[in-house]
Amino acid sequence: AGESTTLTFEVTKTEPGTYTIDVNGVSKTLTVKEEEEVTPTETATETPTKTPTQPGFEAVFAIVGLLAVAYLVLRQREE
Image (cartoon, rainbow, N blue to C red; front, side, top):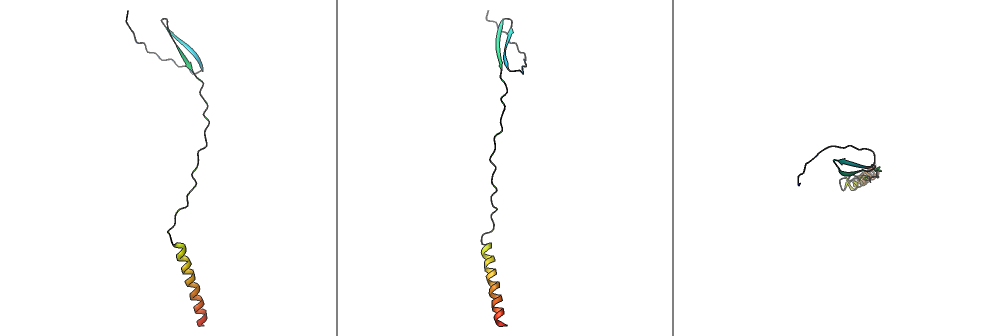
């Protein structure tokens, strides 16, 4: 009395169902569940962000354009 023995074995069951394993009158129940189908979920895609430009480029081009127009107007008057 009080003795114990460790018994190790491997059982592979791939079909869903309930199985009973019996070793010398000691039984255990093994339940194999059906594999759940995983539905892929949509992942949010990042919207591309606008690449920042150097501040003031637009202003520089506007000033250069105005200076070019002023130069052409003054040059036209001298002729």
